[in-house]
Length: 108
Length: 118
Image 1 (cartoon, each protein chain N blue to C red):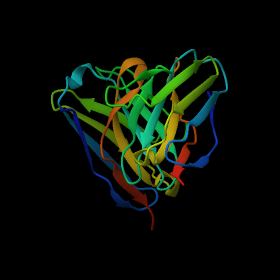
Image 2 (spheres, each protein chain N blue to C red):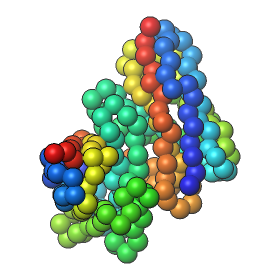
Image 3 (cartoon, rainbow over the protein chains, first blue to last red):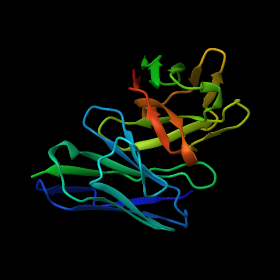
């Protein structure tokens, strides 16, 4: 099975800060990498698919990059409504399609 | 508007069974691959199972293989998860999700809580 490792597991940043979350796959997954945002008490929402494609509802301050084994989710200017836990997930080839352990983003 | 509404969760004793349902609307259900994902409260997301559009292909996480069965009724726009031989570690919120481009999970239900306890 492909293992997904996110870092950091949590972070605290101020409004307006640039925030970067990384996700590393245990083997090459091309760009079969998705990012989800889960706000407290809510179901997750797909944020970015295929490593860098934003869902239509996602603000442009969010971006994704990477291919192969190393991926990044960036929030260019953190906003209060970005308080959430962010998960990466690989959907390469065959199941299981594993998630990272999550990164909790808090606002200072 | 796409809607996924889970039901069937609740309290069950270890070794018991439960069947979850997910009623889908707002899209062509019979064309969509569907998935179940679970989350222990306060913990991360875990992919559980998937089924292809006509039900001919399924897959499972190792932790539930042989105990859980995913199925669908395209005439009723409904996804199911039959859970047998339940264990305490199956306690979680179970989400019904739709697979989109490259199986990115682009729609999620609100989740249904399954508690396995005496």
